[in-house]
Image (cartoon, rainbow, N blue to C red; front, side, top):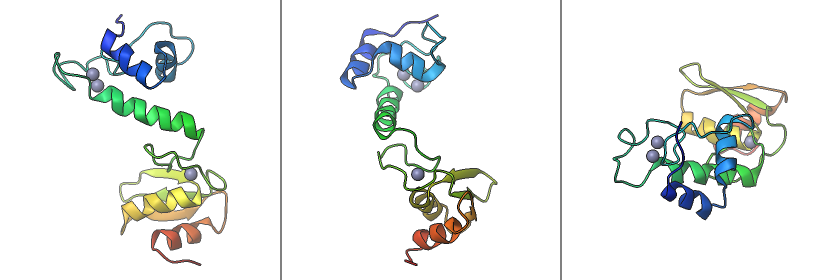
Length: 146
Ligand SMILES: [Zn+2]
Ligand SMILES: [Zn+2]
Ligand SMILES: [Zn+2]
């Protein structure tokens, strides 16, 4: 069992996140002890692996930034960018994307189009809950307006 060190608590505070909230975010409401490393990283082998003992944790600010964005944006589709609080538009499973490795994501049309753009030229898009979504995503990703 570990506890958060003072600088981890300080960093959490600067993002307006309590230690209890941070713990629940990773392990749910049933867990009452911190299972990560003392620096605030949910990986219990962060110190000496992700960074040196005397260094500031590099994981915590990044994770907190993403958490803050997600908290502000609310529930979003799997294609939503983790670092930008842009809301979904339309059903969150309108389209289904499959990358060349067979990795699948569902998403709303604008977010799926952004991901497909990054996966070009070999990503594929299929309709999800919306029949026409695949075409809309394809056109958006390729800079065409329908
Ligand atoms: Zn870490
Ligand atoms: Zn760390
Ligand atoms: Zn979305």
